[in-house]
Length: 483
Image 1 (tube, helix red, strand yellow):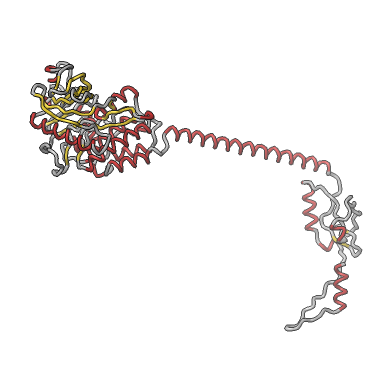
Image 2: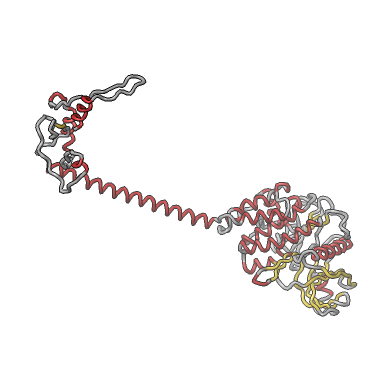
């Protein structure tokens, strides 16, 4: 028998007796060519269930049952009525036990959080079988929302995540796990301010982890039995191993991944391909599928999809806090824009540097031309010596001992040099051609230029421990040397 195609609508719940089968079969509630659901055969709109609830229209169906919008003829209010289809599950008695436990779980959790669909009543109709009365949520499933509007924004996904996390947190505190979280089990209602309100539905595969829950617990699932929806099962759930709260966290991560990218992280054309990806491969990084998503989500999903349960988030609260932190990181788009801006700044800086270098080169060339022209004009003119001395009369003498011509006085009288009795050196523009002569003049032997020798100043050293007063002759000699 050929392997049936993988149902991607995520409304199918699989239950396989053993994981040793070659393929995991995914059952559809109503496939073409199959027998329609029992309620559709024996009843329909206009039929009364339990002598009280009038069926109006079918609003959903799954592998274990179907949901109708009905009218409570006593209270004159609309309700949601869930009818079982026992033929799809082995053992009708076991089905009834799970059905009763589902109603008890939803009734208890709805009293503690508004994000769980409340159950009001249960019963058994002799013609249609067991039924459960729930609150009627007039909205749409997350699956319908994604099919119509596409992926959610990060903020919308955070709003969805927070409300589902609250519902799971309440359930996990009571040691109850859902085991079948998927987009078709999340109901969305438009709240005030366009804020989406979320309600978790269908605890039909819920499991109590403690025996003291004061509920009608169904028998424990046999080892090797797989319960859940294939694309949303954790690896340990797929292998028929004992599960705990980590199974719900894995399913929630798959839902968040789909909400952000619009795609399932473990896609496959057949159940065997889905199994292979779930057990042997890693999910693609969401930023590769949608570059507007923050990079931090890649690491967040790497933890959420860790193969070993102990490597994942320990609780739904920790998972939510890590998600809030991950979405504060930059996205691929922002990183690309930042790189472009940085590259533009670097290019601008390089351009400015090159322009400044060009300006400096231009100024240097201009200065060299000016100096070169000055050198040609001064060619053949006698060079003014650089070493100068003073004769006894205070006149300046050159390096060859000949008196220099009297320098021109500055037009501004009363300068500091004039007040101190010194002559102001004449202004001179030195050119590059003057440099050799300046060097020769500086290195000329001092014997070639007779200098006026001034009397040396006598140093008076006082004796140790005494302060000797200078003699009058020494003071006069010092005065003549200075002036």
